[in-house]
Amino acid sequence: MTVPAGTTHSWIIGASHGIGQALAYELAQRKETLTLSARSQKALTDVATTLPKASPQAPHDVLPLDVANPQDLQNAITKLRQPIHRIIFMAGIYTPMPLAKLDIKECHAIIDVNLCGALHLLHAVLPMLLQQRTTHPTIKSQIALCASVAGYIGLPHAQPYAASKAALINLAESLLFEHGRHIDVKVINTGFVETRLTDKNTFTMPMKLSPQQAARTIARGLNTRAFEITTPKLFTTALKLLALLPKRWSRTLMTRRTQP
Ligand SMILES: NC(=O)c1ccc[n+]([C@@H]2O[C@H](COP(=O)([O-])OP(=O)(O)OC[C@H]3O[C@@H](n4cnc5c(N)ncnc54)[C@H](OP(=O)(O)O)[C@@H]3O)[C@@H](O)[C@H]2O)c1
Image (cartoon, rainbow, N blue to C red; front, top):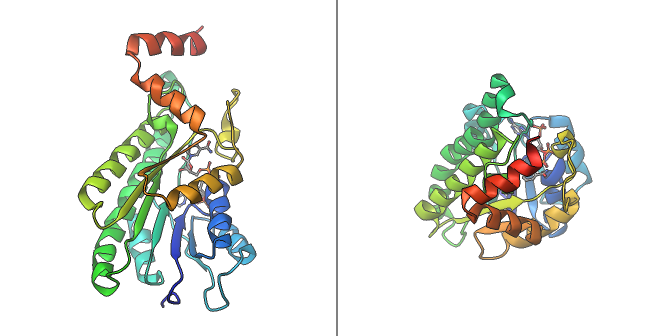
């Protein structure tokens, strides 16, 4: 199956809820044709049926999958409409836990989705995108990986989520250096956004955004030449600076807030 000529086809993985769902609305409003993925078929179908369509010939597709299962990604490639312009990896899970009380089963699940999920995706899509360069030489495809400011510095009580996001930033950099001439690589690092993911936090989250606010900035950022998309700027810059401080200073700042 093909997408009508002149239509931007974007695949959002993690489109059933939260920021990915809001991004689906944002990109559909910009007349993009979408393929929506996540585990829950019903939630994806609900999103797809309410999205505006670029044209009756360009319906949005629903492609349920589990990113922790590499075979699901391989199967998805065979069902995906061609050509593909953007691939946006938004899938992620989070459970806050202190290092002294790690839930090891949950640690494996977080790494499996947040990091291995992205590797499973790249393993499946890179050969397809290399092939697409011969069939559609004018298209420079985009891959955007959603990490987090939690990847800038090892925040307390945030492992292994923070480590998975640091690894994702690192992975996006390798992707940029290996394939950046032919693929537009982006990393998305947001601060706090109000979703079911952050509903698990019991602390006050400074400068928290709505999913719609975050999605608007992300959609704009996808159409710029910048590698990194950040929002909100003040918060993400503050955390970047914190990560640059000598660790003796940042430890003093952090432990004052998190240790009795
Ligand atoms: N909220 C924040 O403050 C914040 C800040 C920085 C970065 N982020 C990142 O933003 C992304 C979206 O998070 P969110 O806050 O919007 O959370 P969310 O509302 O829980 O959405 C997460 C999305 O990922 C999908 N997903 C989870 N596990 C999956 C799996 N194994 N396979 C396929 N899809 C899966 C979920 O759908 P199903 O459950 O249906 O599979 C859902 O669509 C995540 O990568 C998160 O780490 C969030």
